[in-house]
Image 1 (tube, rainbow, N blue to C red):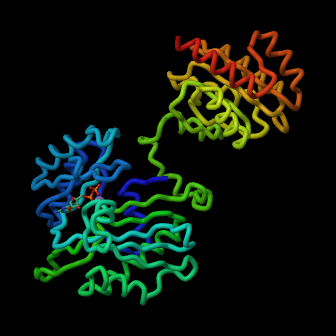
Image 2: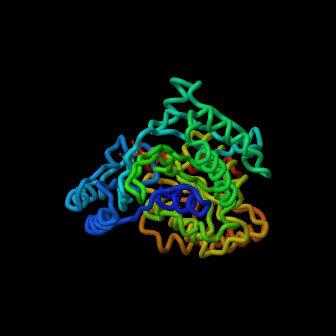
Image 3: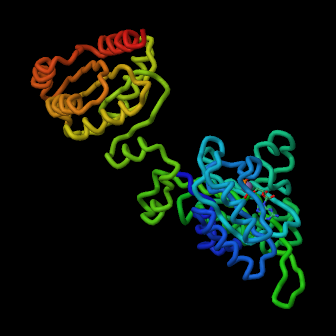
Length: 391
Ligand code: GDP
Ligand code: MN
């Protein structure tokens, strides 16, 4: 699960990392108020940043500085509603602008093959790391941290020196260890700071000093570990999720949208994949992966049907149910009910075997559904129906 920069920064702060303060605003007026507070606290400029779950916001015009409250309101107004890589900006982060002396890159990512946490650092921060990796791979330094011991001090020191952060050694070591701590505390699979920046700051006595701070933060969480962290679910940004995905998760249905025309409703992940393979082999393209799960009741079947039909490209539906715990007659009742509610008439080919398959077959025939005996037969009929609809 991806989370917004502001939320990622919150997780970094919890681990004691140096992150300058910020506020999140959903309207230009709120952004203005946040900017006013920053100016009152002594900022000479503010930075307004689009909160969207994609990288490269700066390049896309989603990160701007403003020198006054008026300008902050104007800039926030321009960024809110902006389209960045297909996502509409609905909120902005407002913070006192940092006076950047130099930008670095630092990240911790799960290295599954090595069974370690991989730290990557570079003195070439600010730009996209993929570009650095492609053009100047020697500019990236790496070290592996043990998932049980975390990043050892000596490893962190070596990383900092090789990144050219020798003059900020203590801070760099703390930050590198903090990234690993953030990762472990939240079961994150990526924690990325770009830029990690040396900034000039005026201290209480008025003299200017340098600080190493996290100016940007990207964290992705391991979906499978979310149940271990009930608090993190709240960081899911529903603004950016496909409504169908939200609905599917609520209903407890595994659903992944694909590009084809044949909707698939199946119970069991393995059978769902097999069904998709057979649709392909019969010359069709599956519109989705859908596993209604074991023991699905008729209301869940109806919900699954709604999810499939929400995709306008779907012009045929293949239902493939293996009745074990799932009762065939329950599924048949769900299908009949779903078709009654359905606003769009799409041909449906149903194959149900196993528990109560006879009863299911009787119900479906009475309701004039097209049924199929074998999976190959069902796939062929679905593809033919889809072609017929497309013609
Ligand atoms: P990204 O493009 O989505 O990675 O967004 P970033 O938060 O990394 O911002 C992009 C760039 O904007 C950074 O690399 C900085 O050069 C610049 N930037 C971000 N925050 C500040 C700031 O507070 N002050 C200044 N001067 N520049 C900033
Ligand atoms: Mn960045």
